[in-house]
Length: 113
Image 1: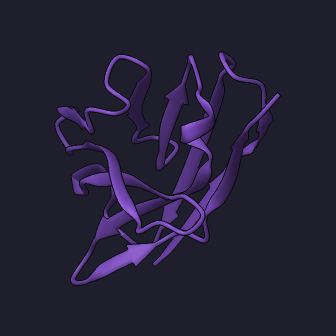
Image 2 (image 1 turned 180 degrees about the horizontal axis):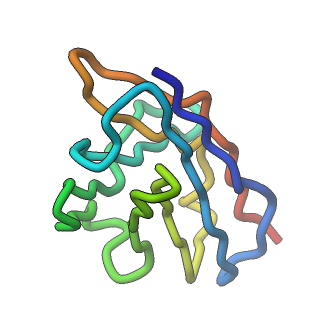
């Protein structure tokens, strides 16, 4: 199983980014996919999830600003982020459970002027 996250970078407050996570080694279309993040000096926290059926759920801190989606044909999950704030600065990880938890390598998002 491999999860490959990309799309991070430096963005000014109020800006936007789209993260992607490509998956292999799993039956992607039946897998629940999740994004987590870990800010410097803090514990990893859940950000958003999407079920195989497309139902989504968000942490209160990102609700209304982030949108998780999936493309089963591309075996990819996305995290569209708008109205970014400095407190969104973190390494973002994609995650799935396939017998056990699997994690991508993380992609760094820095929100700073």
